[in-house]
Image (cartoon, rainbow over all chains, first blue to last red; front, side, top):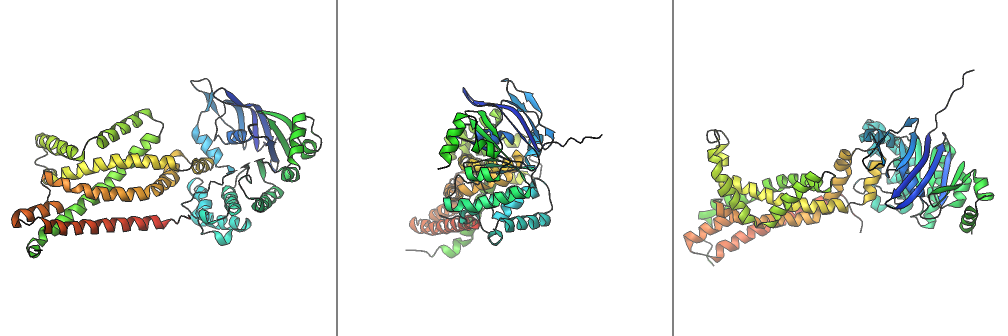
Length: 260
Length: 229
């Protein structure tokens, strides 16, 4: 009998990270299969964003093993004893297969949103310009911004900018999408339109890892939830389990506080 | 007021305008090009590059332009004839002229000031924009070319406009190394006609016009990317 081993989209084990004396991540692991939507919740300072940023090496972890899109990240031991990525080209290549959406959007203000979206496909993936523009326009239409494609980011609302940055992350056809508190910087009225787009992506079967404070949304949309506290995974499991029947006391408190 | 001397000296004046403009047209782009390297060296990781750049900027900002000009003209200028083969080469007609040393001094000096300003502008680019570039997999060189430098230059444009105007105002010192720029023309007219006020007044009009042209050019550049206030 031939058993096919499907490689996970993302497999991260035992990540540690300290800033000087302060230990932020004390051994966090995450594994995401294709189509999984993993939500990471927890109070401020619990290390959620740091962990997410370690996945695409915007922060460099002190320790941990990473397998992204089936490829193992190679480390070498630095002079300070900590691990460093051995080959930055590998990291850059892996990053182009991950799409990140930031809390503060981080669109490039000197380009129109169409130019923002086609920047990575053309210059990093070397896709032909015409093809990239077609794809970008389709994605902008999907997030509801086609008529604003030649506008500069400064002239868009927060919700529109975030939707544009989601289109930008999608245009490179990422294996996994990373969301770092995508709605935390938005007015309450604008949160809905962005969540709608993200829900659509989840329903399409996109693999996503999301750090969020939107409890109800996380419960609805995720296939798995991780509750982080002080750098460790206190609770992990299906949304029904983590939100409905948490075993950890702190998780219970957190969920209760979040659902007023 | 006596302006009857203008027809007789119009060629001298126009040549002076041309030389002043030439000094700007060469020293500003070349100086700015050098400034980009100086700024990158100072925000980069390499401590040696940073040290060299800092030393260069400290020297050229810490000494008067006039002293730098004379060091280059009398110092470098007196050594050049001794380089074997140089006097016979095609370069000599350029290298023996005061204009070459004046342009060199203005370029090196301008680069130091713009390097520091550009460094500040590069540090002012919001970190998030650079992170977004890293997150899509851009190499450091590409981030520099596509995001960091364009954003930094855009941030620094109002300051650069002022710096180019200051460079224009620095050009009269080249008269001290035999370059007959606009100020040199005014000086010669004064020597010949013994009129002090009128030549200076005319030359002032030229300088103000040049300043206006510079500010208009930079205004057009600033308007290229609309900024919402």
